[in-house]
Image (cartoon, rainbow, N blue to C red; front, side, top):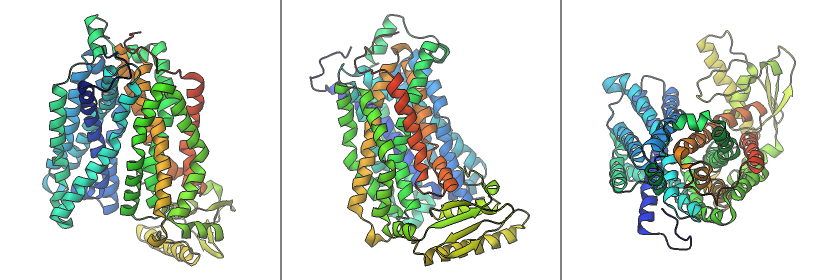
Length: 552
């Protein structure tokens, strides 16, 4: 049992445990960034029967399929982990995850095998998502159960640093292959290489995990004959445990997830979409902030061993709630000062019949809007233009006022495809010309992008991420008894991060389109973080001093 004094140095075996556990999470992030970066190419390879826009949409839907099934993977592999052991379940998840990534690199494209290609791709993504559902819970449980009392926050925080490693590994491999073989060859066949070389990471992971011992807590429990025969019913069928699962979701992981997604993913989207900073520059700025901010995962993990997990996580949520609006406003001024000036000088106003305006929740991007209000808002949102809403007369087409220029919208209902396309082109051109005349930039001026300020702002957002995410693994492990720990902690983690966090971009976009304010999408993470702050502060107990070997 790992109960040595917390002031002793980390042993060789403990370092090995952390490396073995973290490699799977590196794998997760490597594939995440790999697939996201190559979405357009994957769409061209596997969805080539569709038009170019739909190809990218469906490749992203295939990507999303992996997120959707993660909670189900948490149930499947969490149950196995609590019944047969952490080590072997952990080994199965890395094999399924790694082989799925590798096979994508071998999979024939649509031109070779037709519709079977996208079907198999989606199946592989779902297999990978199922395995990932068991991977994080296994990693956190395995490391925590090997950690000495008083150092669980520090030891498990290393798992949280793997996002940066996965990001840089994917960027390094993609850049290296593209440089070596050229862009044309990379788009044709070279894109497969980053997926194929993942077999090396898989081989190392499996080799290390095979040499590991079962966790001391599970070994002790098994020797005493106290393993659970039905982890699912114990975790979710008994109120004393189910209420802790619900508290873990609402009072911890939901808020942690939205702060995490806002600080790393929504910030990148905001830079490239709303502020029109070019992709390579935005990626480099995010990467720089991650390099600076990543050590804070370990810092806050170690600090949580001293002052508690809960104060740090709740403080991260509180700071997010209080500072998101001013921070993103400052980001606009630093990244695209011309846009900030145009918004202040020439406001855009949409006047429309409120009954025509729908809530534009469009996560797949395939929904077609037909009312003049929705079309006007969609065009402005696509151009990242903030606007005010004014109620118009019933039955009158929506108008967009930019400075002193007024553009009248149109109804697409009842128009033929050719007529609708012509109207769409004319409306978008008139809007674009008026925006240009009012000083709205088509993209951020590279000469005016204040990179130093942007990196400072992004680093602050990453530090908030490290506050909520650094101590979370240890706290989730400590909330549940050994016999159902793997199952119980995995589900709230993956619902929180996969659903609350995963829905953030689509929900934020819908809020922006509805309100017209480019910052209003921040209300989603703020409200969820506030929910977690209230519930977590009032009802979630501090866990740093609990005995994780206890079984009830």
